Image (cartoon, rainbow, N blue to C red; front, side, top):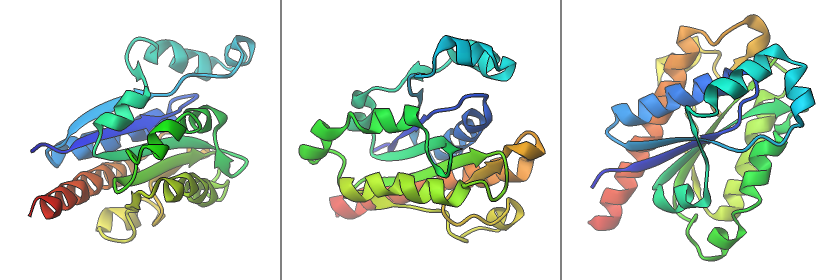
Length: 203
């Protein structure tokens, strides 16, 4: 049976979007069926308009990437969540989506599913690790299995060596090929672990 992976993210100017694409590509490489979904924007239009990169990304993905829905969580066997860093924490946009999952959590639909996460901040030490740790707090409550990349592949060292998840210091420019390879590996690892869990349950 094909493993189903939902890659759900928020991205303002496109940095997390590119990581999400790489994670999705990695999961697909492992044989998974993948849904790439963005969460709804909450910022006022005047704030978006004030940043040309933000406006350009919002316009380019409006029809390109579907909005995430709770049904995507019910559908998936595994999750990958992405968010930019906001003062070392999860963005309001992704957090708002996660805060709507109470019904699924209460029904036990989120438990025992593997999950991983990725992020971006302007600076290397601008909150990347704390954002991922904060995001994983929700998954502990869900009863999910957290699947970090750790140091399980050489690509992770070349990408900066964050064991919690792919993280992009956007102040240095666009995501490097090394980082995108690490993000793809993270998606591949997630899908592989999900498939292994499914086989174990079926045995």
